[in-house]
Image 1: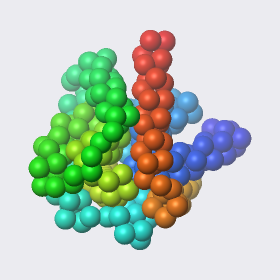
Image 2 (image 1 turned 90 degrees about the vertical axis):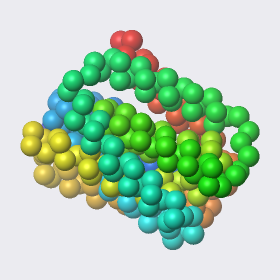
Image 3 (image 1 turned 30 degrees about the horizontal axis):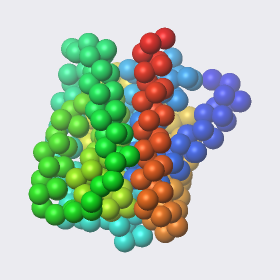
Length: 247
């Protein structure tokens, strides 16, 4: 890879990590299409690197939200257990399921969640709402494993919809998606292709960007604006994925 391309890739990943950190997400939802512009092998280069980046950026985002007082450990830990157990199942099944079917299910879920995000929601993070999120975390994790991304992009709006305040949902989500990102990486390791210099550079800027984004969001961004930002982001990413599928 040329030096100019590497510099642009690192700078772009840094920006994406800031945005993902603000929303309590790992960066994989945006890193997969972004890295695919520079790396030719989706399965052996892009997906393993994206999962590794996702786990690290989610971890640093969780740290940022924890420092801001928005990480509910009693909810985050059980969700992390569910996502960690189910994410590798999707990664193992990815070789046996038609990718078009996977993307169709994913896009349907994203469209529904985007629609619900733009509707007024009453904050009611009680035990019933959490149980709903816990049950939905299993299929969300399997689907994310199938696609080679972390479950946060679908789990975050789910937490908001069932009633969690946006910043609290972001903190819970950031921690909950960290372990499954690494567990979903395991099936990719035997065949993964790594560029050590590029990987280390991306991991460093990803960690810095995610922590900075989470700190900014937890301290200075109003919860309503954060929810709106996620709503816009989920619509943009959906439109992009639809365009890619059509082309």
